Image (tube, rainbow, N blue to C red; front, side):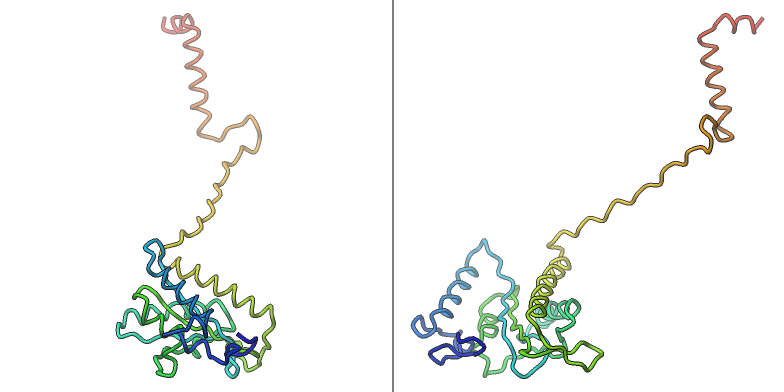
Length: 221
């Protein structure tokens, strides 16, 4: 790929040749496709997500493209990840996110793999503006910086954590153990609260009666 361009040095738009990439004309695309197919066919690997990351030259913010499925439940589940990302990233726009199956995009990785993988796999294109983003509720455009792009990447990772927590696949961190209140010490050492002194005194008398049986015999006379 040529930096900041969508075509290879041979002039091919690589995101339109996923259906039948040539090992000669599209070697990187061919290699990635073979790797994904090998992972998909490996019973030890559960391939759940494919995300193709692109920069957009006209639209603002970050947003996603997803697929359309006949299965309504699968279609609704596909919307969960971008909705969570919208909550975690102020520069991600769910309103700009769209789900389609346009014929012109049939050769994209999102469309091709969305039809190849099973119904537990979800394929997206993550688009991010070349220029700027607008935070919800404002009209001011904030220019993207290298740090802003990296922050969006961290928010994507955080969104995956939230996603798997919702699916009970990641153990939630244990809540801190609440501190127990310490028993109040008497205001003056050597004193006991009222109502407890009689029991202590009684125990002392019992000990005395056990250690001095003669005194007990005298008292009964």
